[in-house]
Length: 172
Image (tube, rainbow, N blue to C red; front, side):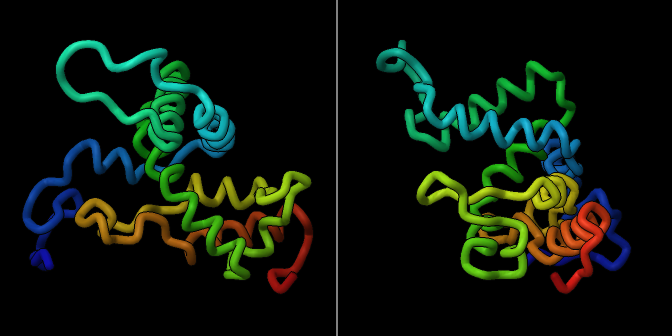
């Protein structure tokens, strides 16, 4: 477990400076662009990374759905000039945690419903916006085992937006 001095600056973790990439990954996302990126992610899962075997020597990504989705979404974000695409990708790669919570009757369940297509969920815009804006826990940059998305922070943001947009009480 890393030791952090009481006097450590917020841009440092365990006495080391946070990488600019990690700092950018923890930035909030523009909700409108994030919702479009969710669509791009889903569409890109179906598009092969290449038309044949990798060319030349070196490493190549496996042509599997998550790699397709990440590469297609990275291209989508790059084409729009998004400043911190890693923030969008980090959230998208961990949307499974949000959907698992919602689909299993967790605190996010009220923000999803079964869709017409079997095995899929319809996710409310307020939940997607909350995922885009929720802070990423500082520990997320330290360990693969760290929680990447704060479900409680997402719930609080989604509840506030739900009440505002629906005029509903927080107990609905």
